[in-house]
Amino acid sequence: MREEVGMIPQDTVLSYDLLASGFLYGPSQLDEEAQSLWYRYLSRQDSRVRHLWRAVAGALDGKDQQELAVLDFQQCVESPIPGRYVPPYASCYLDKPITLWGPTTHKVVEWYEQGGLEWQSMPYVTAPDHVGVEWAFLAELTEVSGFKAQELRRSFIANHLSQWFPAYMDHLQKTVKSSYYPALGDFGLAVLESVVMR
Image 1 (cartoon, one colour):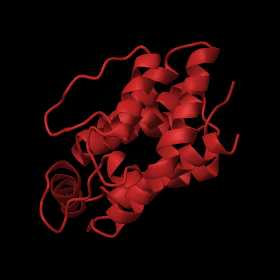
Image 2 (cartoon, one colour; image 1 turned 180 degrees about the horizontal axis):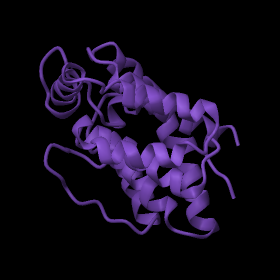
Image 3 (tube, helix red, strand yellow; image 1 turned 180 degrees about the vertical axis):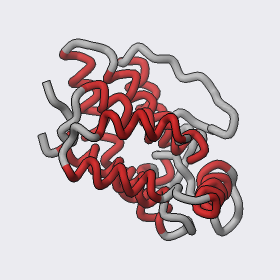
Image 4 (cartoon, one colour; image 1 turned 90 degrees about the vertical axis):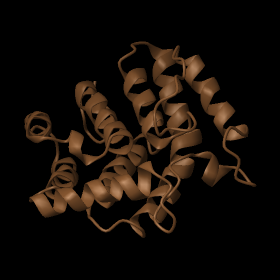
């Protein structure tokens, strides 16, 4: 059975993993071995998926581009650098006033618990509604079989992630200097769109 963006389930998990890794650990995780694996899977997919993937990988062509993408991660995603940091937390876009560990954060924890996962703190991640953690949750959930897991994944995407990820990417794209995060965001938006439109 084919899912999101014309991908087979293994490709769906890899998509979520790629997005989680990009936001949690930065572009340095996308080394040549990882890119080779991706090309092997995505070569079977439709041209739109291949095009979006090529933009992500192409944004890391050359040492200068890689360094710029890593700097964007460090200053715009990982650390609160004044003037550059774009908070990667859902509550910053959904809660008024903005409150980490407020209503949105607690709702996300409930979704995690429904999926059988327990939130564990991580370095540089203040709350469980971090964009990278949410993509990692989807990767874990996609590997669980059954109707309940599938419906939970769809609900999480339609009723939560798709409600704030576009606004986050809009802010991030205006701040970063490399093309890596805009390309990664386009890839993520396509995944979300495909699930919401089904």
